[in-house]
Image (cartoon, rainbow, N blue to C red; front, side, top):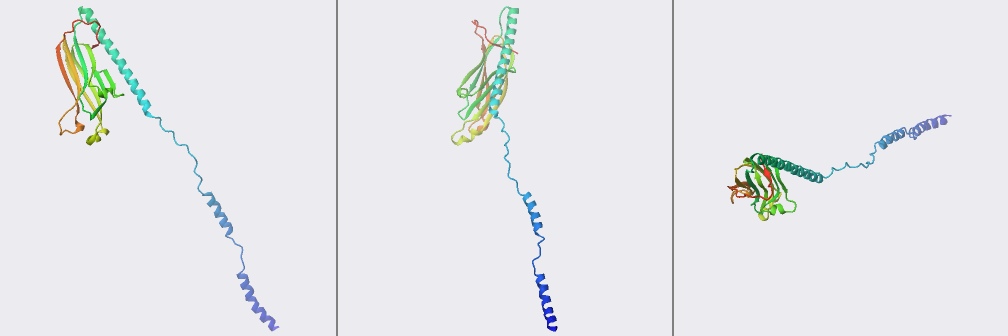
Length: 243
């Protein structure tokens, strides 16, 4: 009996130790599964294909259309201006029996060197468009003189307004000029005398000397010559300009 109790006492700690080292059900597995779900939900979504915003239409075609429209409007204004001036002259002829007055000739002249290329030339007489020119095929830049107007003009003071646009055409050590555009704006008042012929030349030239910076050279001068009008007989009516 004592032996039986002795063996029972020896086996009791071993059994408890076996129970302590046994595998217990894991309570963390559901937690790991629960964590997997949010992880899956937080996975980065694949980028969606987005249509790029439409690019703006080229403005070049629009600018060309606007420029053509402005040129047509200016031509129409000039025709109206000339028609009004003719009406005034015809009225004067009816009242006085003779056509008297003054005559004028307006000329564009280019004396710039090859470092400057004329791109645009806009002329206005007494606020009305006289001549609008753009260098499309190179003829404007090559032309030394261009007649803008010749005909009868109402005696008195008249104003010529000029807008010239040059682009740099540098070469050699002056290649830096190619990136420059030079805009020259100028106005000049001249007098048309009764019975006289007035010739006005608007000259684009380079002012200054060797020490003058090339960027400061483009400018305009006005050459005026007045002489007695010797044109007594005219086979066809001439264009008339007036106030």
